Length: 207
Image (cartoon, rainbow, N blue to C red; front, side):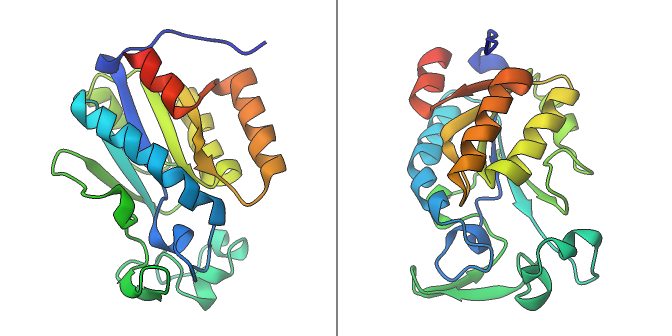
């Protein structure tokens, strides 16, 4: 049976995992078409977090110029310079050129008080300062949004639990191209790693 726990605005942070141009925009080499539908509820959570002085952390998956083992699983990194720092790409759905690793415009502006972290792995916790940021903010609970559910979102939730944080996956704010994976991951999160709520439910609980 899914477990529940108590959480408050004062000790909860919001993280946004990899909602970047090269995952969301039309023509993106790692396009997750379902991610576009998560932007409105994610923005709603961002606005709520700002209004309640909750920490917000934007995570950006980036790739360097030197091949790593991870490139084996994502050939687009080499062939299309996917998510490479400083690389620009034209996206037809917005009819302009943007930095491929940038957070999508629908979730901006990113304010000076927000955190932006680059990561070279799937998990937002691996080799980043996320743990230090959350602990410095007095956080015990982390609301997780973003893409891809069975990859970066799942690894982030698993590692967050291992670090001692209460993790909440937001079902209408995480996305993947495979709905079987979506269902399985969220069921597994609810079973062993945290809670699963939608955006309205978590706002209601925090209020």
